[in-house]
Image (tube, rainbow, N blue to C red):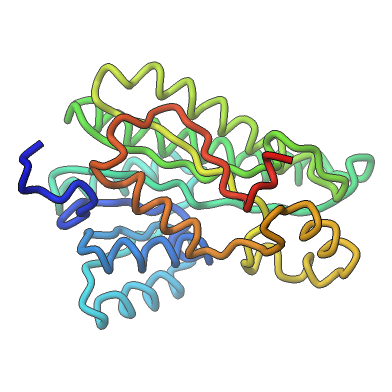
Length: 257
């Protein structure tokens, strides 16, 4: 590395953010754009994508959006093609998409279980495979998957679909890191505990649940989308080039208990 280069710089990096219309994806996009990256927001919610893209551009950042379903291989392949036509490279892929429905295991409909697995795990595989092919040719790239502490810790709140989907992401992350490391491609995952988002807002209104969660965190506070975004910034930069195959727990110390 040139000694005059800032290893934390993201200037002109081309970064795809899956789930770019969600709370996590939006926070990540804003923070990456503030650091002069070219952010491409991908989601099925075109209205929110347009709004966020305009917000970033009006703030002086560089952003564009593509509507695509993470579970549709053809749409993801087309998305990758469009990004390459515009930028000729892909530096970073952030898989920040995800859904959850909390239903007791004994009542979980199979089609609902499958939908969560498809979006969270299958969707991550599809994007990793589609973008990974490009990164292998480039001999460089970074993939950042958003996992969860639910992948490794049992929750009593109806997580029999969400937890396995995130456990699969952890395993996929390590597998790809080993397969693709020799090509200069790093694959890591961020595993947050409970983050204040639309996905958790109503659930956390239950005082008993909220108290149980807070009491299990040594720092005694929830995380924010910005906490996740800060870590994504680091993992997107050259400063993290020797980090590969890691599941990084972002949980206020919950995993240490």
